[in-house]
Length: 351
Image 1: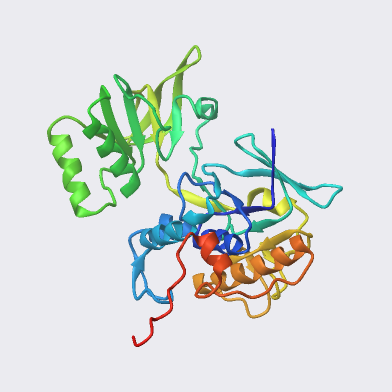
Image 2: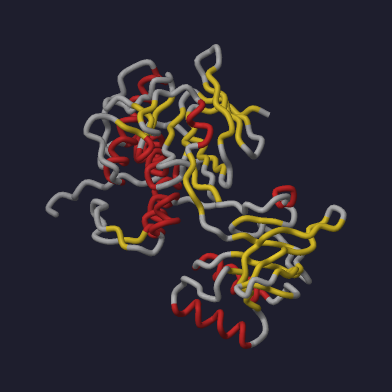
C-alpha cells in the first residue's frame, strides 16, 4: 500500500534528525529512513564514545549523547521510522510528487525528499565466500541476530576481530541459551576495551566461548542447510568448523548506492545544491550535510544544521506556495503548540 506524505528524510544521522525537527517547526511530519538499525548514523557508528566539542551550547558530548539529545528534540513531531532500510528506487511522478520504494517493501509518495545520507548509506561489509549469499537472512546474519531470534541450542559462530564482534560473542555467551559460541578471527588478537577483553577471557576460561584463529575459505552444505565453514589456520591446515548460525561482524562501509541513479547533478560523488534552500537539480529533492556540495561548503555538523534549517524553509514555501513568516520558539504560540510546551509566563508586576 502506498503511503502519502509531505516529506521523506533519507538518513538518520545528526543532520537528518535535525532536518526532522526543522520540518516539524513548519508543521510538516516526515518519514525517516536509515540503513542502520538505529538512529545516529556515522556519528554513532564511528564516534559513538568519542568527544565532540563543536556543538553550540554543548561544551562536550559523545556521538551517542548527541543522537540521544536530537531524538528527544524531535519526539514531539513523531516521525514515521523506517530503520534497517534502504531506498531502492526514486522516481518523479506526473503530478510532481516523488515515489520511493524501500528495501522493506514500503512505497512512499511524497512532495519533498531530503537527502541527509552523509557519505552514503552505511551498510555491513559482507563475506566474499562463494555460495554463502544464499543463506543470508536465514543462517547468516550481518552485525547482529534479528530481533526476537531464539539462540536456544544453536551452534553460533561470531566472525570478526573488533569491539562489536567481541561484544556480540560475549552477549550471546552471557545469555546462556546457545549450545556453543565460537569467536572466529584470523588471529587470536582482538581490538576492544580492556574491560571487554577481560570478560572475554573469563568466558573462555569458563568454557562458554571458544576462539578460533583462522580464515574462512569455503562452506559445507547439506541439502538446503549450511553445516560448516571451511577454515584455514595459521599452520596452513584446513578443517571444517561446524555451525548452525553465522554472525559476521565485519564493520560497516558507506555506499552511495541508488542515489547515483536518481538523475541528480553530482560533482565528485556529492550532490550539487544551491545555497539558498539546498535544492538539488531535481525539483522537490533537497540535500543537506556531507552528501552535498556548493561554493564554500564545509563538512561540519554545525553547517549541516544550518543547511537543514534553510532547506525546511525552502520546502515549506514550495509546499504552501507562499512566503513563510519567520517565527521564534521563544514567543510563537504556534510553535509552542507544535512543540507541546507551555509558553513562558510574563513576569508579574513588581517582580
